[in-house]
Structure formats: C-alpha cells, structure tokens
Image (tube, rainbow, N blue to C red):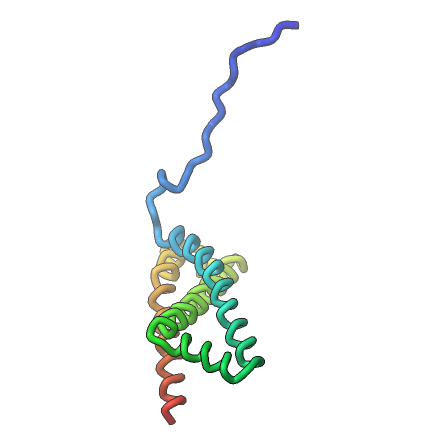
Length: 136
C-alpha cells in the first residue's frame, strides 16, 4: 500500500465580508445583537428590583443613577432594543409559518427596512405615555 502525499484543497466557507449587506441580513445580525443587549438590560432591571427590595437609601441611589441623563439614555436604549427584538421575533415567526405574503423577497425586504423605524416609534410612544402619566 502506498501513501499519497498530495492533499486535496478543501473549499473555504464564505464569510460575511464577501456578501453585499442587504436589509434582511442586517436585521438578522441586529436581532442577535439586541438579544445580547437584552441580557444586560435585564441585569439593570434585576438591580432595580433588588434595590427596591432593599433599603430606602439603596433604592434612592439606584433611582438617582437611573434618573440621570445617562441612565435615562440607557433605559431608552433598552426599551428600543426590547421593541426591536420583539418585532424581529414576530417577523421570524410569521416567516416560519410559510406564509406566501411573508416569504417574498420584496415583502421580506420591506419588513426588514420598517423594523428599526417602527421599533424606534414604539419606544418613543411608550416614553411619551410614561412621561405624560408621571406628570399627571
């Protein structure tokens, strides 16, 4: 038996750098990123709940941090991420049903382009309602 020293060149898997970014691909990537961001945002909620269950001074400290301009910015980002991830999940659920209306190239692209706009609008709407309710 003879051994051959020649090796066959194996094909390389394509990487993201060779693909042209399209809206559906970008929304899929952002959906994964928002999932990670939700993990860290949920830690903020857990910290707030632990502070609420703790002492009044500890709760006041956490409320002071969350009520600062940076804290409010992070909380607004958390709410936007929450809506964006939710809409992405709904989009994937509809696509998984096999609906012809959701599987077309144009429909999928339109839904992907609309997601950031709709999620941002929903986040603003929730914050406006919360601010109005707090002021009343």
